[in-house]
Amino acid sequence: MLLSASAADAQVVGASQALLFAGGDLRVRQNANITGGIGASSVRLDQNARVYGDISYLNEYRLGRNSQLVGAADRVAAFDPIAMPPIPSDQGPDLRISNNQNVHLVANTFGALQVQNNVTLSLSEGVYVFESIIGRNNLAIVADTTAGDVSIVVSEDLLGGNQFTISSIGENSVQLTVLGRLETGNNARLTANIVAGSADIGQNARLVGSVATQRDLAIGANFNGTFVAPPEPSVNLPAPATAAAFAGFGLAASRRRRG
Image (cartoon, rainbow, N blue to C red; front, top):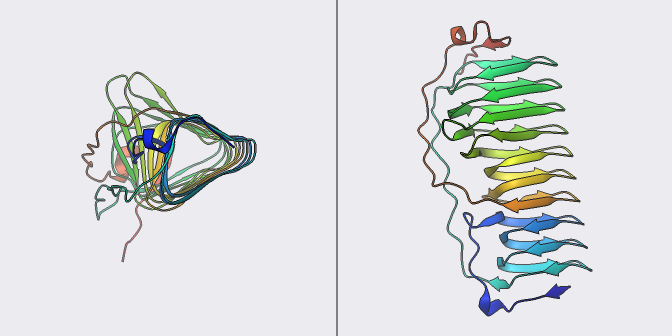
């Protein structure tokens, strides 16, 4: 393990300053390349990690063998809590998208989204609220931020399969907020600022932006991440959509009875 700066030089790396932040434990598997700060209750990076930034921790941090920290590590007394947006009590219709579809959605409030293999979901400026997102392999979310930010809010869990992708077109930001658990398979490609209750990112992931969790954060082997600061939080949640709004969009919409 190599350290190139003293703890006295470190700044507190909170959720808005970190590439990776966890209110609980942060575990990053071997061969990580991290350009940006890290903050967590406890930090563990396995062998061959390269960290170009500072580390802030509450309890302990460990770097595996042959790892390098080009920055400073500092034990801190506390982190500011991560705030989550309120979620509308009335969700919109559930959506089901079959294999090999390219679907465009407009900003709205939806129910549960279930996605089969090889689906591209195109979004434009605005706020998209989902009860949950369950995807299989090759789910690609393409956000057109030319006219403004794109914000995705999931009130429960987001489970993406292998090759889960979030990409952007334009100069503005993509924000993903998952109040429950975020889980991806291997080979995720994520260009977004992400906040979640907890998260598990699979092997060979690439991240441009940030991930912050209220609880634990686990990152698979061969991770490569570059920090881009998140914007100031500002989410105005839309009213629920109606099933009729999706006529002609090539997807199925259904309203569930909620007891």
